[in-house]
Length: 265
Image (cartoon, rainbow, N blue to C red):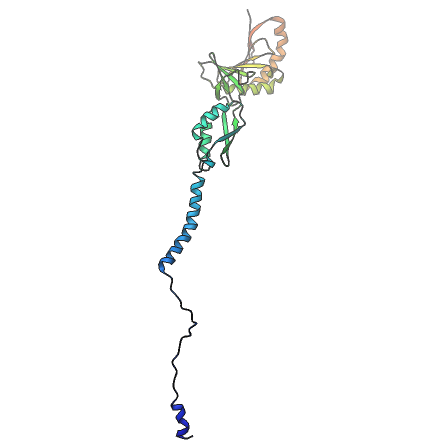
């Protein structure tokens, strides 16, 4: 190869690179726009539920306006309306149900309360009432007793039952009236033919009672835990007592192996 052959190569030139006119120019986004986008997204995610919550807890749509009541016989509807009057207009969603139950438990007839919310503006209340089992006589006053011997409320002949066992307690004894139910159950197990005619139990002291029965023309003085044997003995003796004494003031069965009676004058 000769120097002439190499000459064209030595004279070659390198052309400068030119950027194509169609190339896309990349623009940087403003940091303020990026920050604003994140803020808007956070506002939608957080502010939306917040706005919904504010509407739910402030809208008059959910203001308490109605109370549905069931299970009540002795608890008057008017009393319930008065007790819940301060809550009317309150937001039903935020209303604490224990507060409603506490207000209604102030009624002496209420044993338990179930409260439910019914949207948009109603409370549903189911009442479990205490059951009157007897009437307690204290002087001239009469009070309903439940089956555990606890006072409920003053006797009301227009609203409450009247055909109940009468329980009286001697003031000097300070005995609990609950014992009257115990002796009534014992009488039912020992002499069911007489138990249905029991009208009054007088509590004389701890374990001592005076029973008034329609089946007998005189009261019986008895002691808890002895009726089964003592009434069986009395049943054998009654025909002879009736033959000899036209009228008896009382029969006392509280003493072992003895039956004490008093002829009426």
